[in-house]
Image 1 (cartoon, one colour):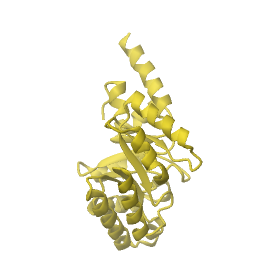
Image 2 (spheres, helix red, strand yellow):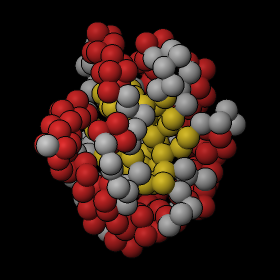
Image 3 (cartoon, one colour):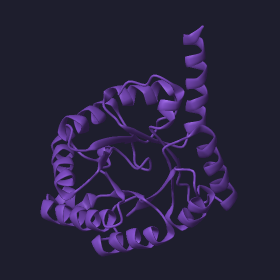
Image 4 (cartoon, rainbow, N blue to C red):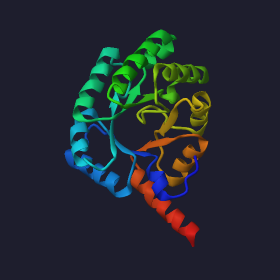
Length: 231
């Protein structure tokens, strides 16, 4: 994806704050930053969705949350319930961790059924489902298979990472997910993206969306870079 302006970059960023100790003031600050820079969305823990929705009312900035986070081990019924509760509070984007244990077991039917059921609930209200594969914990074959299963199950995005595992987004993983997805769905890179250059590299590799907590720093670097280019 070519980025021609800082504003275009901002529209590719999910401004994220998932620290469990984040306060209400931290969430308000996150939302104020999203308004100031024009980010695509904010991504917060489920217990902070209502506050974020209130702070971003009538801005056009989406509120996203996480499901089965960060290990994907809560079970299908719990994940569907988490989606329902977040929908009631106003969330419209949902980043769900797949059942990583089922992936390791090769129980692809379980993985497929879970994605399908969560996707059905998300899409019932016009929401967006981003399926987190946690690529750092999978081998190449598992990544490909998990991506295909997620696509067939109704994922709107394939997402690289939670940001809470041993590794985050890599160029190689973004390229792999883009290759598998083709034009069938979008790709989100997340985990360890802290600079303008890193964000740009992920987008050039095939990502459509960037999830990061260093969004403000990235935007300030981008603004400076574009200013220098204009000179």
